[in-house]
Length: 377
Image 1 (cartoon, rainbow, N blue to C red):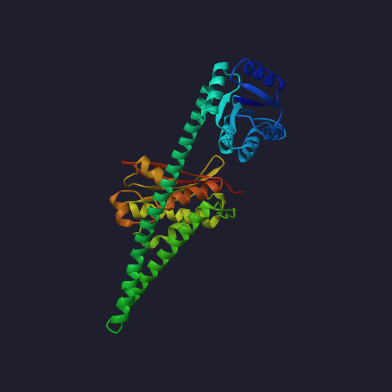
Image 2: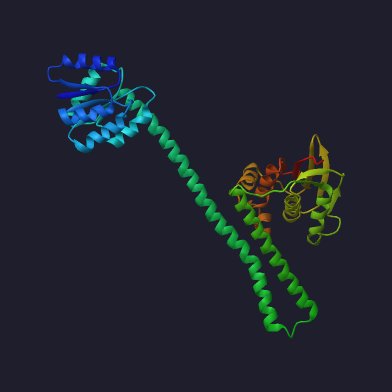
């Protein structure tokens, strides 16, 4: 067996030559201190096996191996690696090395590996095998995590199509029915009925517009661009405006306000949208009174919305806060509907504003959703 030794360390080359010179069936035909010289010497000497260091100047072991294999595919390469260089093994695999051995291993292991690669077999030292298996295990874990992420993304896409198609169908059905009725029975209907139909259709158009706005907001969040414009504003004025927008959804006295004059900091329009969503959720998904309170805390302003209906379990709350297009499983949720975006958007907007969304919920005491924002100047 004709062997060429390639290593930039003269002591390593000397030790390998001393060991191999004692083997009757092995002839050391040369030594090289770098990969570039190794390519030249392989052309000249045509050894059976090259013992190749992986880290060298001028040309790395992987680069030299690739060049050797391109011109002399019959020449075998046994790569030597140091502990902690397992990432280089993959480079040597791509280059075409036939075996891998850890530097400092036993003489018997080196000789067995040389015989194996010379015979056309793969050779992998025990320590290298352990390192490769650890790398494979880590790669397997990463692949599993990637697969889980892709599965979750696929599930989110499925939920998106299912939820959005259902929620769009409801207002479209109302609008379509109203248009059909007005087209075919215009002369028969009295003015109050016509106005009622037109009002219902207008409300459903507003609902569609709100859905589209929410979907676009989520798209902006996922792209990392909410485009917030923070200003100082009166938080209790925002609370009153949000309540006024929802007057038509509830009977007098159900929505109860407790106000303190407080200035907060944030994107006023976005914060008002969040307040409307929180109050609307409380009115839609529960019965009984809904309390809206504006108060000040240490360096923070707080607008809380409390309902007295059934609370949410931890899994449902986590899903609604963190996964867009998620919905609760309660009968009230199924009856009222919704895209499952309000709490996700609320949390993202508040956190982007330097605040947070605090949630307290229980089966017996209802739920409190609190917008916490920096105090304004």
